[in-house]
Amino acid sequence: MKPVVAFFHPDQLRFKPVYEWAFGERIDHPETTARAENIVAALDADALFSLQEPEPVTPLQLQSVHALPLLTLYHTAALMPEGEAFYPTVFPKLSQGRGDPTQLTHAGHFCFDAGTPLNRETASAAGWSAACALSAAEALTLGQADLVYALSRPPGHHATEDLFGGYCYYNNAALAAKSLRSRGLRVAIVDIDFHHGNGTQSIFYDDDQVLVVNLHGDPADCFPYFAGFATEVGRGAGQGFTMNLPLPRGTDGQEYLRVLRRHVLPALTHFAPDALVVSAGLDAYHLDPVGDFTLRTEDFHRVGAALGSLGLPTIAVQEGGYYTPDLGANATALLRGLREGLGR
Image (cartoon, rainbow, N blue to C red; front, side, top):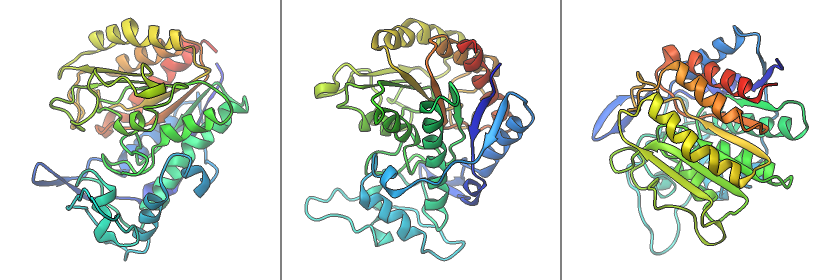
């Protein structure tokens, strides 16, 4: 069985958010370094995986997805004193003028929640997270591998062209998909995170060359609340190229796989992509503190095998997953399933 190339850079661990605000309460931040550390340990212990460092990301690559003011804001945050963090608490909808990305007090203009802090390490860690996804796309298109894993931390699928939030700064999956598209490939993105990938959807909402499919908790009562309804199907040329499959709280592995096989696989087959990007959120796990599905480790393996059975060159980009003791096992289960499904 061919090894799975995995990309990660140790500087992704320098970003350490301490707390977040949730429903008016200050709580310990779930997006800890232990997430990546546990996955790295699992990859190191498994001979199937080859762990490598990515090439640095360039501003031009980031601007293929994100607006320049957002990048400017992150570099403004990089000038903060060590140990300080800024949490946006004012979120203006400006009818005149624009937020100033050189002023941290304007950060709320570029953000949609109060749980995603900025500090001097944000730009570096998020940059290396994006670099993992872009190096994965490069490895795939050069034919170096047919399955590549980007251990992207912090995650990315909530980040839009010009907004950060949901613990996300750069949209890593979108960057990978844009890189593949720049080579003329039709791309499908399947987001299996418990939370809807509102950022990825918004970036490709008008695009008929990228199919975006989300399986997620019903936004009627699950973050991000404002996106992910079944009626959202794309716009203009992109109409019909967005698919949302909101599922009720408590959905188990059997039902999840039924929906995947009945709706997602046929949609992918019909679209006939040249490559697949999996937004590999693992917070559908039954012990996850911020998800509310009940999948087990073996279910992630089955999900991977089902997606792998399509036989497509595939990039798995790490998104959520916050029960750290089992995160490494769940990540490797998904990746092993993808590899076995590909049968290579």
